[in-house]
Amino acid sequence: MSRVKRFISFEGIEGAGKSTQVKLLGEYLVSKGHKVLTTVEPGGTHIGTKIRNLLLEPQNHMDPLTELILYYASRAQHVREVIYPAILKNTVVITDRFTDSTVAYQGYARGLDLSIIHALDEIVVPDLKPFLTFLLDLDVEEGLRRNRRAQKEDRFEMETLEFHTRVRKGFLHIAAHEPERIKVIDASRSTEEVNREITGIIEKLWH
Ligand code: TMP
Image 1 (cartoon, rainbow, N blue to C red):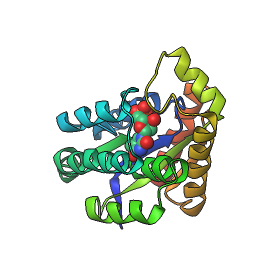
Image 2: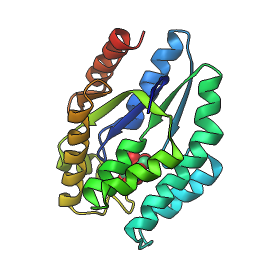
Image 3: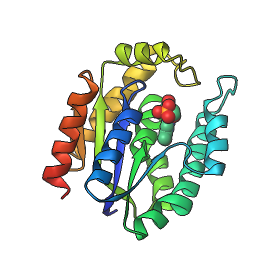
């Protein structure tokens, strides 16, 4: 699968600060004269937002395979309705989560066979891989604390510490296998410091 230059993703555990960094990188690239679209998974479309609600509502008891397929249903709509058309119009797309989240959450943390995820991925997004992925890495307890402070409570926030620890390890494992694409960023630092490192990497590797 080929990496697409105008496609950048952010990944990480809960509370790592992805949405803030997506916004800041978007503003930076606009200031450099790029057309930019920032988006989010699950979601990013009308249908995707409905699927997102299904996935995150705390009262929904969901089979792991149902969960996996819903994430890919949201992604199928997202790439076709939003991501591909934007990239074709020379817009830089920055997404808050993409396929690596599925591998980390449904694969490493839920325990679904990675071969099922890769097979679905081949069907849904056979030719779209981010050029760069920023993995915002943070201590799990600190991330959950930050989210509790922000009063964020969904089906995943309610998972155990062990679950989130498996997610973090999953992400680091994926990153170790793809060091060219995935840059691990220490997200325990201030918003400004994290942003500075990210824009530094963009200047070096992307322009
Ligand atoms: P968010 O809160 O970062 O917007 O993400 C929503 C939740 O969905 C988060 O707990 C991670 C989870 N998730 C998965 O489990 N698999 C996926 O493929 C994606 C994109 C997100």
